[in-house]
Amino acid sequence: MRKILLSMAAIALLFTSCENDKNEINEEQSVEVDMSDFYLYTDTGDDLLSKSSNNKDKVKQCYTMNVLNRQLDANPGLAKKMYDIEYHTRAFIAGKKGGNGNGNGGGNNGGGGGEPEPPIDDGLGVINIPVYVHVVYSNSNENIGNAQIASQISILNDDFRKTNNDANQVPNEFAGVAADAEFTFTLANTFRYADSRTSWGTNNAVKSAYPPVTPETHLNIWVCNIGGGILGYAQFPGGNLATDGVVCSPQYFGNVGFVSAPFDGGRTMTHEVGHYLNLRHIWGDGRCRQDDFVADTPSSDRPNYGCPSYPTAHCRSNDMTMNYMDYVNDDCMYMFSEGQKARMRAIFATGGPRASFAGN
Image (tube, rainbow, N blue to C red; front, top):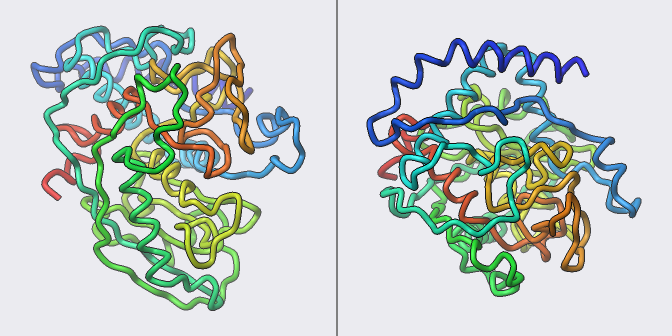
């Protein structure tokens, strides 16, 4: 409850302090932007995991939202920065397709369930993201080989370009919004560090020990043993550059070598890079009326685990369980939506938090 009240107070201040920011959006983006559904703090952990009907599924797969909550507590200025980024994102998308810029297409009702919107031409073309991989290891298994690293880069390219072998499994209900996100990834360099530490946790200690390299223009990935059953975590756009990037445990990185089922298909990184590119979890990390700011992803009140059958329904609509931003097994996630594509790409537009990547 404390975090909810803090979030509401922060947003009230943001509406006042950010009024002048609207004038900074260029003419193409000069549209009315509805931010009434914007939120910062989210539900995390046991309250959502407890909704799973299968005890074996109750694992803390992604710790990104926990990290975000902690960063919001530690840095009061981050709330305004994330508000500005969200405003810019919605204004950019609305300027390309018309509308009020509301992220979910339906105020506080959670979005989803409507007619799919046509793809927008954002004029950005295929965006290449160069990648630095930092392998931090305490034993030979954790010192993953080059083939395992190459497999992960290949998976990112297939997933973000909709060329993976599973893309044709998308149910008819969602086939019209399954997107080629038009991102490519290129391995720029691999750094290897032997370290006696056997577990790094989620407080960004690995990033402090081995800082990111040119995070303004490169995606930095740390492959190390996180511990606690956590697969990975990422930082949203707007956070401190000194901690910008994605952390992944080695057994969930790539699909060859030292990998562990059922998260041995490289989709942990696809999921975490989605966060790095400004995507929320598919269920919005809350109840049915808390959304992920994407119109074409149906609302839900929980993550899905394992390999659920279709249809699986919550919140009076079928869940998009095969979306990369859910918690299902690697073999059972295989799509981004057009709305998610628009959100990810908007942050690379002029004035966006990752615009410095342009031209890579």
